Length: 127
Image (tube, rainbow, N blue to C red; front, side, top):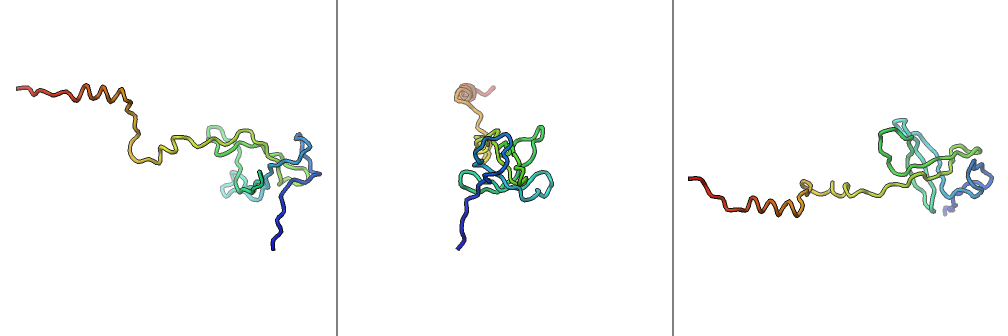
């Protein structure tokens, strides 16, 4: 039988500028991304463990997920306290629209009424 143990920061760890309470949100760096542009991490928060990656900000590139600040611990630098600077954006409506088939519906009610006024008239053919 496997014994489960809650992953928590060491009580004697250095927290830098953070308060005296252990951080409930920590990251363990375990590898480098294959392209070398980021780090693979395991994140523990809200009683769950998540696998992910962190990458540095780059001017002009969109942010994927949350914007976080990592504070390495002095006694174990691969274990970092996480401070969320900007939460992840909720999914946009445009993502839902991309799943639909066909062109975008751009005609308003007023547009359709005017279209009918112009084009539904009986046409007389020239003799």
